[in-house]
Image (cartoon, rainbow, N blue to C red):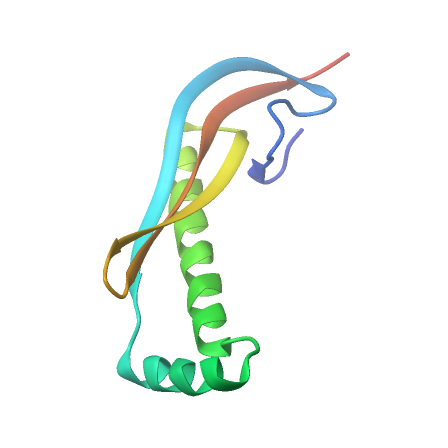
Length: 111
């Protein structure tokens, strides 16, 4: 028995069979930079290295998109999301969309 919703990048769940494909699920968010991060990033680009403000912003955005995907999968009654992916794209100057997506499924333990 699966006790929590699972996210797998695999197209199958080892030890389980897919009994029903519930469909495509996704969660997304659009994040923008702020002037404080832009100033810090400008200075960092002179010396190199990680831009921690942007890294934190993107980590937070990935988490939010994944939470939204899981909510959608839960509303369908899914046991798991297979073929899980996260993708980022620029939507306008200074803004990026983060989308998490996959296939919601019902599972049954193999015997």
